[in-house]
Image (cartoon, rainbow, N blue to C red):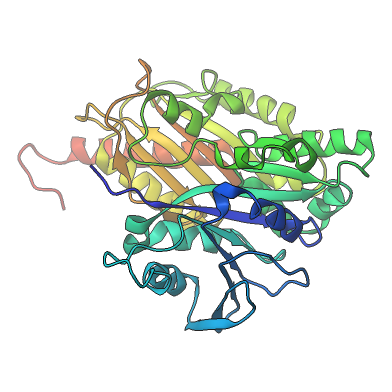
Length: 380
């Protein structure tokens, strides 16, 4: 039985959205009394919590509620997370157990959330200790629409979120809120969208969503993938043996239904669920994602999926943000009778046709190599 890992929640959102105010409310919840809070900027609003780590580029300062500085950890977030279990171990715990059972990281409002997600996902030591539980993005209900127009980082924050939480709904115009909600849904179809006011009495519900875990089973996998939110789960098939001209037109029509009514930068963000009918060889899958990562990695804002590999009776689960990937893992079983590969992409400056063209290229290259190589010959 695997050791339970410590969940990490990333709280992000653009300047003025109310992250620190929300965090102050969160840490009053009894269930979060043992949470370690890491803040990567010094805010003007203090936090009344027993364990806070404020960090900048040079130092991480761990501050107790008394205001005294108990220690300073030199280094970046990766180093801080590695040292946290030992740093915060109780003196009487021979096993070195940490005093915290959850981590909440509040980012600066100008931050691209991807590097912080990378930190939790890419280091094997951190993977053994922590799991990325959820990305919560706070959106200003009054100024959010204008911020999405003006700031590309705000778009990325919305695109990678598991939960989109809208603040200031009590003072925002109802029509503007409806427009903002529709826009957020187009940017990130699978995210849970709620208002801070609606969550006021049940803040812990923010931590109850489906999270990535290599031991997910059945319905949990489907909830995590949430492919039906993209409206493409059973409509956009990729089959190497048929003509894609019709599919491309259909996808174009679908994408405009989803995105044409939102303005300016939003048309750079595409959200699709790509279904692949036939099993993929491990070589084709590796080369396909190698190409995507090399050529388009910075524009693949978030990717998650189930892959049917030839010769395997269990699905491979993948999870990535930009060019950083959680180590792929085999799930214990398929979550349903549908054994097709399904991959959810949230992309910037890419079309589904780009994904399909790269997959076709790799398939054709491997097919040609098998035809050209004499039987029994070793591959070059």
